[in-house]
Amino acid sequence: MEGAPESTFTHGTPCVKGLSYPRRVYSPDRIKYPMAQDVRGSGNWRRISWEEAMQRIAAKMLEIKKKDGSMLGLALTKYSGKFGVLNYAVEGMMSSLGYTTRFAGTPCWPAGIDAQNYDMGDMWCNDPEDMVKAKYIIIWGANPAWCSMHSMKYIYQAREKGAKVVVIDPLLSQTAAKADLYLRVRPGSDGALALGMARHLVDKGLVDQDFVNNDAHGYPEFEAYLRNNVTVEWAAEICGLSA
Image (cartoon, rainbow, N blue to C red):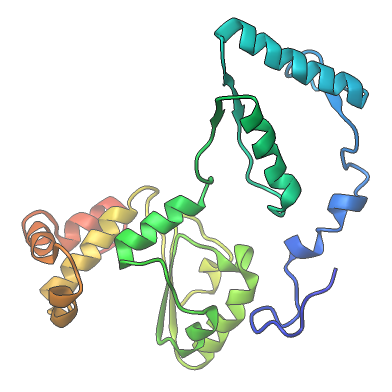
């Protein structure tokens, strides 16, 4: 397993997850054959033949069909692998059986898209390399030192140029330990912190009026809500921070 030196992001250095990929093939614990657990939860797995495995699956599917009169009791969920031909082949197989139950979307991506669309109006963002030019970096609920190690070098480079790094997280993560300012908020209080920050910007006259008037939807109502319902002290108490 080797990195791609031409990559401007990794510069040829894979992360630990990437380096461990060969273990998927060569690990002594890799499951190579069908296994059966006759008593659910027992942990007593035994190897069975491919023929027996197919017979078990087919019998269960026929049982569902006979009991319910349809195959809706058969559900398919998948979100792993390389999303190649074999990954999608099972979709065709399931469709050939008639109506079945499918899990729509993915475990994480739609939520991320919605969050960016609601927060910023679109899901596009800057290249990680642009962080080097930043003067103030806020890392909210993320731990790039653990889950995006290649981003950390840009954060360090920005700090060397004078940028301040703020981490907001209930946990003292590896990234938080390297921050210039660490805000340890109570779990679930992020919304209150965001509202408190917004109220502070309004009070100090730091809102970009040109932007909110021309590129934001519903800002007058939002500002009215802040003035009537939110104070910095209220947010600080909920978050467990000092105002």
